[in-house]
Image (cartoon, rainbow, N blue to C red):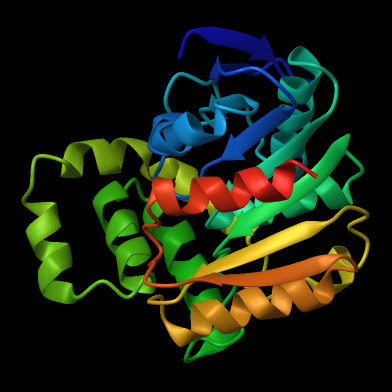
Amino acid sequence: MDKNTISADGTSLAYDTGGEGPLVVLVSGAMSTGGTLAPLAVPLAERFRVVVYDRRGRGGSGDTAPYAVEREVEDLAALIGAEGGEGALCGVSSGGALALAAAAAGLPVRRVAVYEAPYADFLQGGGERYAAYSRELSEALGAGRRGDAVELFLRLTGMAERTIQGARQSPMWAGMEAVAPSLAHDDAVMGDGLVPRARLASVPVPVLVLAGGASPAWMREGARAVAAAVPEGTYRGLEGQTHMVEPDVLGPVLAEFFAH
């Protein structure tokens, strides 16, 4: 990341920009950095000024205790302020929940796009399953068991046990453990894991909620519920896409929405 700005609590935020035009900030999800969304920034940069950034506690950004979701909302405010004073947000996975929280908090945001914020309303076990994950994640991180924390997250996503154990033996595992403490941030952003309908009812801007046609049914139904809870919410499915959405598929849809 080539640029830097300072959030309200003094935390340093690393970010990159590309393109010219109206501002769009991309917000990454769990176990990811700004670099994860860099491929999505490429098609958007043809029409917009795009910011990708490392959320606090990962990549080149700092982290200041105690953590609170409000601090991450302030991070977005700092980025928008540094790059023009008004922008649109696109959040992927739990980054979508953060983008919605920022809009509800009254940040100078024109539009918000959300791709598969993983609310568990329609997941088997629902809120109880998510509560168990939150509790076990807190215990693992509190004991310094970063690998176990990563396992818990991967299991929640539906990854097969054999695949998880294979990942644990792979060269990428060390990097996953390095970012594992930030799973607590995403857990806080997701709240109780259920669609926060009361908060979403206060979002004052148009919201496009997207899900992949090849994603699990619970993910698609959760996306529809988010769109229904927002006063100006619209749901759209992307045929053949999964949670690992292709930038060349998502990019043009976002560009059309943000161009209005």
